Image (cartoon, rainbow, N blue to C red; front, side, top):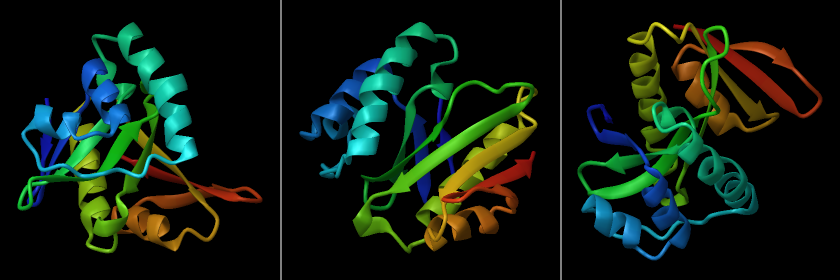
Length: 167
């Protein structure tokens, strides 16, 4: 299973591939036939990998793609450029997404294209009617990604903004 766009190949990682991702030693790239891309796995992502993705993927083998990272491959360079994910299975048609672009690939439109690919994939599914996303207030790059993909602001908290897109 994968999503393909003009420049990208977006693939959900299996449990073993997630473990290779965490190792961050080039083993995931070797597994996928790509050039090594050192990743900056910050505290939030490290916590999500250990306490969410790696715990839930084995419990949801049939629909693991809702509980794992999807690797974003820049086809031209045969390298990883970022990650995108769902935050669980759809609940009454709604499902939240999250994403991050590796620093050397920011401001190249990669994440806008990846989100568009995920939106198109979601439109083909009967179980998804609405995509949700959350941005930190002032994260203009992330807001632009969502605006380019026609998400609208749904509500705003003190520190975060919630976005919505009917698919």
